[in-house]
Length: 212
Ligand code: URA
View (cartoon, rainbow, N blue to C red):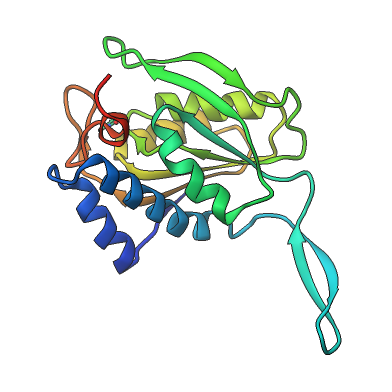
C-alpha cells in the first residue's frame, strides 16, 4: 500500500482551521470541500485517460479525456458525504456509489448498513472518500468490498490518518497484490482509548452535520 501525505502550505492552513474546535459547521463543510479538491489533485495522478484530438480555432490539438469505464467515487456514509462534491467537481464524469458503514463504538468494528453500488466493478478505478482513517477497520472493509466486486485499484482520500489505521491497512492488504493508495492531508500522532484520532478534529460527521 502506498501512503501520500500531501505536504502543502494551503492544505496545512485549511486543516488547522478545520481542527479548531471553534470552527462552526458551515465553515467546516466549506473547508472540507476545499481540502478534498486539493487532495484529489494528487489522488487522481494515475487516473486513466484516453487520447483524443480536438479542433482549436487554429488547428487540431492532441489531448486526453477520462477513459471508460469511468472512475467510481465512493463516499462512506455519513461523514464521507462531506467530501463528495469536492471530488466530483474535479472528476465530473465519475459515477458515484454509496457505502453506509458505521463503527460499532463498543467493538470498534465496521458494520455495513447500506450499499448502492454497481454489482460489477471490473476494470474500475475507485476513489473512496472518508474523512478519518482511525482504526482502519471501516476503510479496510470498504476496500475489500470494492475488490470483491472487481475493482482494479482503490485510492482512499482521508482528511486525517492515524498510524494505527495505516498499519491495519498495510497488514490486511499485505498480500492482496492490488494497488491501494491512501492520500491524506496529515498523519496524526495516535488514537486515544475511544478510538479518536489525536490531536484530530473530533467526530467528523458531527462537525459536518451536527450531533445525531
Ligand atoms: N472518526 C471520527 O469522526 N473522528 C475520529 O477521530 C476517529 C474516527
